[in-house]
Amino acid sequence: MQKKKWFISYVVKQDAQEPKTMHAFIEGVDVEQELEKHIFEIKDLMGLETEEITVISVSLV
Image (tube, rainbow, N blue to C red):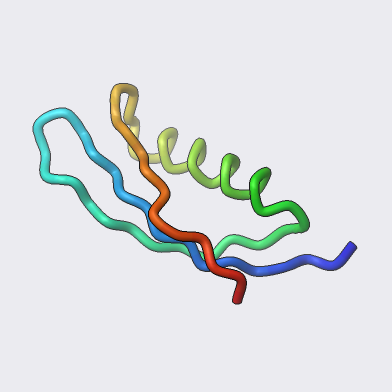
């Protein structure tokens, strides 16, 4: 299988803060698996527990 690259846009909404739109490139064989992995990494890095992350778009690059 060949690795593919996707451009993703998503919104992070924390309790008392304004929603933030974020963008990233992810690479892998399975977009769903890589997207889930990326979202969990973001949650850990930002120290979020009760946030809401909404994926806006996923585009193959």
